[in-house]
Length: 486
Image (cartoon, rainbow, N blue to C red; front, side, top):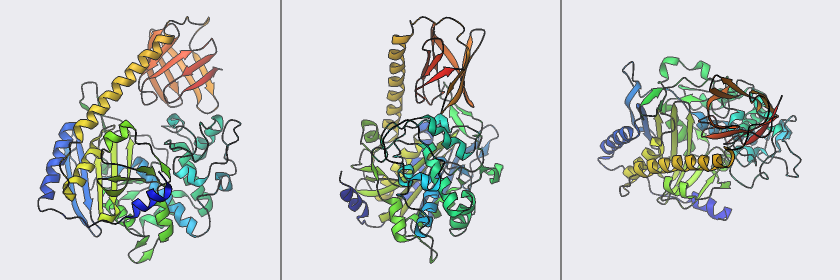
């Protein structure tokens, strides 16, 4: 839709929250229904208005084996919700004329390079911060890699963008890292230092950390994932490699409520201006439209328009304008949602990865507080998950049917193969057990033919791995790249 229409729509006003008499009891029941439905060990839910926290409760267990109940002050990894902190820092620097969203990344990062020989225009800071760089996700360029931020970004030089910058939305964490690096270069201070001095202290976010190593371990719950029997099992904490402007923030729900209240305004905090009203509006303004696919329509059945801004997703729900972002990392899921005109903010923490509880419960709370008719979100979300899983299996089956019968090339299959962006991929065998490792990420392989395997979970889904001749290893899924034998 036209930019002007989407922007005007987001600016429309609405009445304040009505706060019905029984809303708190209804929220309690909704939390417990959702937690049981999704088999989430523990949750923390917070609701705030424009002045104070109206609801802050923990449900369930922080550590099921130790019988430790969830605490309302528990600290969760915010994962991708970190990005909004980074874009606010960039907006503060833009106010001072030290950077602009239209700046090519190379203005602040002269070493930045993209791969390929395309004639595309340079990627700008705004492209990076709105996930419209032209690159696909390529998650294994960053996931679990113990490298510096610059080293991870430099891997992009080994891949060509799949589209011109600024034309489409593709969630891209590695490119987003450049926003934090540009903040460091323009602000002449490390990203976590700028965050602490420019955001955490002014907003009194005393239980928020950018460096995971500084978080008191006892305040972080155990993270879980569902096993094959749909039973929650503990997972190892994500191996953070220091502060990361795309993912490393940790906070409790009370601090996130203060954060959301700040975003209800125009950049003022306790009478002091952190950022200009214009710069704040720029963060929230829709930039890159998202298609209302069948999947999006199930997740957001009352949404007519959706776009990504600068660290925020902007869309509508039953006629109200929303800003939101989700975060997911090993064992955890986070959702923060803001209805600026209603002066309503909602935070949902869950210590279970890949669950859809957070979005389903957020929508339920919005409907309950605003007096909308009841809508079941849990059932449709679960059915969508099941449908997607079956479709993924069927797609894998069809792809395997094309390659499973291909004869193996002469010589050993095992070996080390290399790619200019992903680095080494090691295909190894011990007896009848095969294994593939790409950098720090590895998975057992299920052999499907003389020269092909399936790697469950290696690329956030099933990936077909196959030899194309003696010296080329093709890895599908979200890697979709060819590696050459070393």
